[in-house]
Each structure stands twice: as C-alpha cells, then as structure tokens.
Image 1 (tube, rainbow, N blue to C red):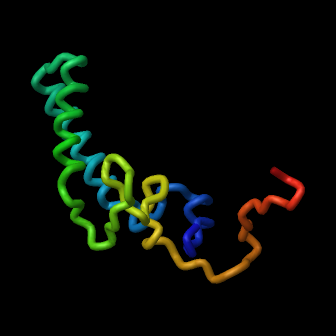
Image 2: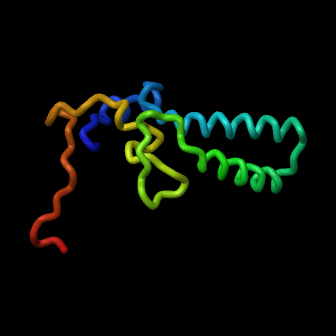
Length: 113
C-alpha cells in the first residue's frame, strides 16, 4: 500500500508497535484515562458520551504532535495521508517489488463496466 509492505503486519497485527500511528495511540490513551476518571467520579453513562465528545473535539482540533503528519483533505477528524487502519504507512518497510506475497490490485477488464 502506497509503496509499503503490509505482509508482516497482516501476519502479526499490532506486533510491531513502531508501525502504529502515534496520534491514534495518544487518542486511545486519552480515552482510556478519561474513562478511568469518569468511572472513579461515578459519572453517568449518558453524560460520559457527551463529555468525551467535547474532549475529543479539542484533541482532534489540535495540530497532531507527529513529524510525519500530513493532513488529509476533507476528512473529519483531521486525519493523516499516511494513516491506514491505525498504522503509519511510513513506519512500514518499503515494498521491494513483487515478492511471493505481493498481490496486485484488482484490474478491471475492458468488458467489465
């Protein structure tokens, strides 16, 4: 994908922490901390969702602290061009060409609509 090899990630999803998107990891950590605090203070479930929505709007509105971050146009919350399923594609090894694990994109034939 985009010149990067996904093979190792597909074999062992999440094993290489260096390949994870640091922005997503920070958002997940903030969410976990938020839930722990809400539980500790006994906040009602319906209120938790509204409070998190406000908190996340602030988090997503800040410029992500990642040197690789490149905003993807028209994506909400601000997402990165290099983001793919919680991965940072730039962290993955470069594709060295066709190997035995390479799968070409589906190419439509001339007879297909």
